[in-house]
Length: 421
Image (cartoon, rainbow, N blue to C red; front, side, top):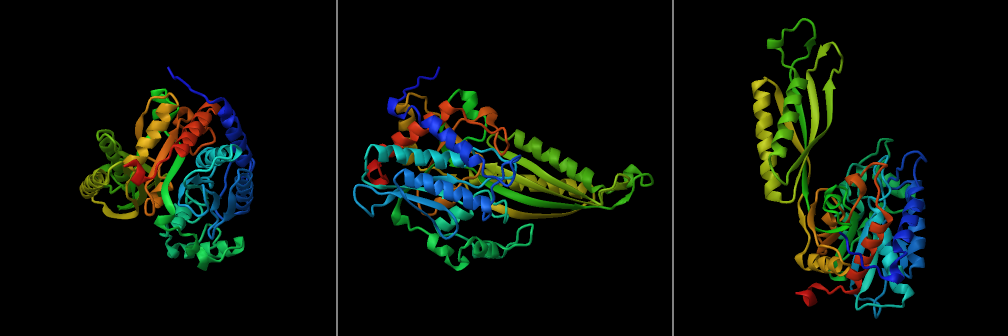
């Protein structure tokens, strides 16, 4: 049974947040499928809308050199270090409207509540809407938060999208100077901490009958590109015993990966793409490529699991007489949420009358970049069915309100690390 403690003055926060989620969700490439990609006209329209909300909330707000929307609410005196809140406002293709915007809009609502009451804190509060977290356009994730953290890789500027437009060209067309991306970087001394509220994107909180949870760590991820090469041949003339079928080999690998990950608690593995050549009904596949995504809340756990899976694939390829190539295409380290911040999130949840439940995040978040300049924490909000990256993604209004009250309580009672130790 959930024991809700609702402050009357904050009772409408959930309704306000949902209304803005709906409004932002209308900014899309098409009306049928929500898609809002980095450095597009939809990006510009969304940024303008969010900047307006920030200013209404009492913040000084502007775009930085890569298109992040940045709002600042001063503390008891100007120039104090900040507690930074935020999330991203880009989407995947055919997206849900809650992934990213919930955290951003909730943070703005909390600042608006402080401003309405004329409350200033012994630190500034900044809200950042990161322009590109998903990495859809230029196949590189966390571009907005990496720019803020000072770890932006300038080699990405030369990467081209599917239309042949480079990121450098897209920035210029958007009105930005690619040479000034470095000006978006913040110093560690400017931030007291980074806190992000986000939908869970999984079913755990729903299973636990809890609206919010404390994130322990953002799981690291390794992605592998695998190519198996056998021998193409006629489907009717090559005996089964003499075949070097690359697709059959890949199928065995996929099943082996699934079996391995199912027996290793805390590990998840996914084969999300597979391509067979020549791809004809009556031809034995001679070459197959597939991608593996493996995640765990511990780097040591993930690295050992990846090594074990690679050995299994090597054995399968050798037994089937298939040539094998495996390349690591992406690797993100696990990001632990700071214990001193987690305690403050837990205290805010308990003070709102809910049980404190801790869980890791299997999905990546901007905190993976922000860890380079600040300690990070995350608040998860329950989503219906654990569905995300899909139009059916949904958060109940009551849960949106609960998340807002938890975040507001966290802000008002926040103590920097030295004071919290």
